[in-house]
Length: 164
Ligand code: SF4
Ligand code: SF4
Image (cartoon, helix red, strand yellow):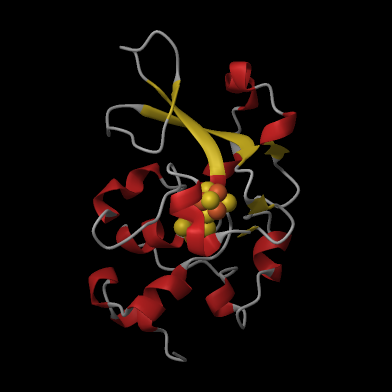
C-alpha cells in the first residue's frame, strides 16, 4: 500500500485495508454533537441528521477516547459499547455530510483529495496533523467534567476548520 491509491481509486473501489488507512485519526467524529431542529423544543443529541438540519459540534469528547493520542480505547467494541458511535462504511457514505469537513472520507467524497498534514503523506505519523491543530488534542472537555444539561455552551467552531 505504498502507492497513492486514493488518487487513482474511488472510495467504492478501495479495499478494506485501504479504506481503514484513510482515517486520519483526528477524532473529531468522537466529539458530541447535536442538531438544531426548529421543530424540536430543545436541541437533541444525535449522530444522524437530515440535510436540512444544522449540526453543531461541541468540545465534549466521548468517554472512550484517549484525548492525547486521539484514539479509541475500545476500538474493536466501540459500536457495542457506544451505540451512537459512527462507523463510516461504503454503505453509509451518503450520510457523510455530518462528518467534519476535514474528514478524509468527506474530502475524497467531495473530490478535495487528502491534505498535506494527513498521516498517509507523513510516513504514517500524526505529528503534522497535531501540529497544524487538525486533531482534537488539547481541545476537548471530558464528559464527566461537562454540564450535559447545558451542552449548547460547549459548541465549538474549531472542529469545522479545514486546512489545504
Ligand atoms: S473525522 Fe473522519 S478522518 Fe477524522 S477520525 Fe473521524 S472518520 Fe477518521
Ligand atoms: S467509541 Fe471510540 S470511536 Fe466511537 S466515538 Fe467513542 S472514542 Fe470515538
